[in-house]
Amino acid sequence: MNDTPEPQLKPLLDGSGNSVRQSDNERMSLTPKLVMATAVMAACLGGVIWNKSSSTSAPPSSSLTSAMQAEQPNAEPQIRPDAMHFDTQFALVPTDKAASALASTGFDEQQRAQILAAVKNRRMRLVRMPIAQVSGAIGQSVAITSGGLRQNLVLKPDLQSVVLPIYLAGEVTIDPLTPPPTGGLGTGILTTLGPQILPLFTSLNQQIVLDVIVQ
Image 1: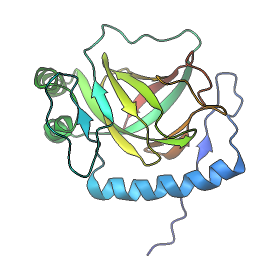
Image 2: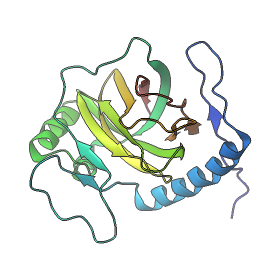
Image 3: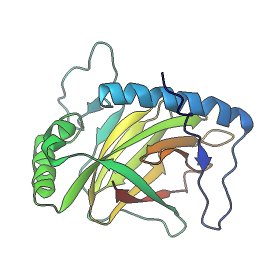
Image 4: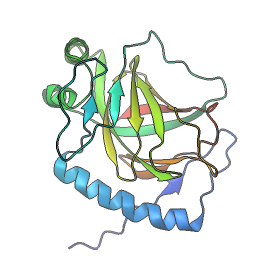
């Protein structure tokens, strides 16, 4: 046992420099969830069971259900002019671990081969973004887009490690897919600097853009 204090969740600032406030109950309940989920993720190397977006897919694991779907690449991410931008640091997936990391995603064989080639040519990098739902009715969905590829994730109270392909100047967009519940949809991510609470989604017409720095 060590005496290192728990990482504290600190709210990000919105575009105007104001902090995004959370209730005391949310702060108290979120920290142990993310800390415990972080320990589990470290032990298991994270991971989320993915669904391929094809008509034929392998049967799901008997103990886990799929939460993610990968879609065909888009030319450029659609960034809203009123999107909330934040600098974020995520851990890099080593090149020799890229193939195994991609195997846990919902990308099809051709997509995985293209991403892997881009990683080996240093045109693209892979990072892991642990994300969890911290407020709102369970079962909300978000779209996470990076490197021209969109992945639809069903959020859970526990951290799910999302493998993201990004270019050298990486932007990751997060958009709500289901109407946020009364009080808003809150999410939290785990960065290399510790847990962070993202701003609440209160409508479908909102977007968070993470400007990724790879560590």
